[in-house]
Amino acid sequence: MIFKSTNPYTGQNIAEYTTLTSKALQEKLIASADAFQEWKLTPLAHRTKLIKEAGTVLRQHKEDYAQMITAEMGKPISESRAEIDKCAWVCEYYAAHAEEFLADEVIETEASLSLVRHDPIGPVFAVMPWNFPFWQVFRFAAPTLTAGNVGLLKHASNVFGCAEYIEEVFSKAGFPEAVFQNLIIHHDATEDVISHHAVKAVTLTGSEKAGAAVAQLAGKHIKKSLLELGGSNAFIVLEDADLDLAVTTAVKARMMNTGQSCIAAKRFIVLDSVYDEFVLRFIKEVKKLKQGNPALEGTHISCLAREDLAEELQRQIQASISQGAELLYGGNQQGSHHEPTVLGSVTEGMPAFDEETFGPLAAMVRVSSVEEAFKWSENSKFGLGVSLFTQNKDKALEYADKVSDGALFINELVKSDPRLPFGGTKSSGYGRELSRDGMMEFINRKAVYMK
Image (cartoon, rainbow, N blue to C red; front, top):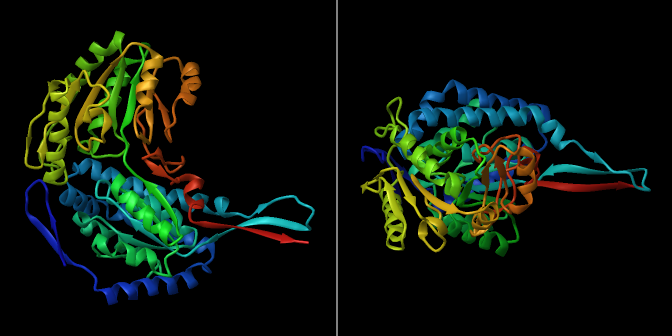
């Protein structure tokens, strides 16, 4: 099978990729198992040196990698560069903290010595998405490889150029052959990989449907899985919020990456007393965003990664309008291009509220009380994160138990940070990436007891 990589903004073909044969795939899986036997014995000091070097390689070749991101999935070039910088940061973070995270935990018992070791488990299979084609991979790879595991990547087919560059990063950094391998395969080969005796775990970032399918396969073959799926994050604005900060942050939280982010703010739940002003100012700021070619400096909003994604967003908008939502701004779509759009009077039951909207659509929800705000926030099958804007910081902390999501960000947009655990609840998945938690996901916490 041939995969074509196409620039979504220009429609031009970038490259073509041929899938691995069944034999070639099996050889790579066996090579992964063999590489693990040596890599797990490599001193941690050397592994941390190499992951730090990976960060250096990313910074040295930032422009090449950023240009590939922009060409393959349409991310504005300034955001593509920022993505590469963040990947370098996560490499540097684990280089600095791996020794601390992986240290033995001595536990006092009646034994002369009892402790918990942190041993790697083997090859980990990663199924990754196109929207942050470098970051999603490095978020998994930096802790996983540094812990002594080896990685196998099945990337989204529209960013295979990024996938090849990622494999190149590890090669340039000096990682041994087969410690990280890029697999050019169709999703139909996923079970062949998961079921293989060499593979010990699987991690997926993607859609709810894809996550359910992979989790089912992992369960069938009794292998550890981690899922980071979709989101419909609430952005709650209370009546005492700093509206300058709230509006500026809200626009960034919704429109970054042209709205194509699982952790983007999607449902703006605003107290009645400040609703009209917030919406008016939000639209005013959105109008300032420069739309156009993602390869040009200064572009804020570009095309979506594929035409079918823009069409799906348009369906959600029109269905919501037919159910009573008010079109306040934008709403037009042509090919893969979709205008930034603001809907008002959004309520539960509309696609703009119930479904994940993957594009530049902001759904405005008016509520009459704080209690109602959190009730509406919780009325979602997703549970990735919530932003809360209020100047009463003490009260804000008291509201934390009203949020069942994996994160609550107060006076800030929800974002992933190498220093903090990242992951969701409900249909947003399970498990945690980043921080110490991310390194522990694919570790054998081995109890050692000496009488």
